[in-house]
Image (spheres, rainbow, N blue to C red):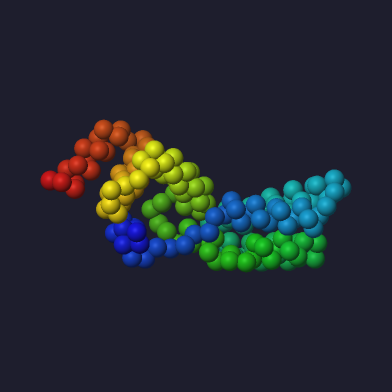
Length: 167
C-alpha cells in the first residue's frame, strides 16, 4: 500500500497536523484550568487569541503570535500553552506549500471526510480480488472525490482517467 501512496503522492509527503484538533485540545485544557462561569470570558478570549495564531501571513509571524500569546496566558493556563506549543511546527507546514488554498490543507477535516467516504464505499465492496484491485478502487474513488471538490463532472473525469490510463 505504501508503494501506491508513493506513486500517487510522490516519495516525500509532508506531515501537517490538524489545526482544528490542536485548538480543540487547547480548549479542553483551557476548560480544566479556567473553570466556572466567572472564567467564561477569559476562556473565550484565550481561545480567540489562540485561533489568531494561525491567521498569520506566514510561519514566522505565527511563531511570534504564539510567543506573545504564551507570555500573556502562561501564568493562568500553563497546560493550555504547553498543548499549543507541543508539535507546533507540524501545524505550520501549510505555510510552506504554494499554489494551494490554506483552508484546504491546514486542517485534516477534509481528509477525515474523505476517509469516511472511502470506508463507506469499500464496505459496499466487502472484499477485493487482489491488492491491485484494491489500489485501483482507491485511486478511482480519490479521483471521484477530487472531481467533486473542484466542481468537475464525474463523466468527464472518468473519461479522462480512461484515456490517461488505458490509451
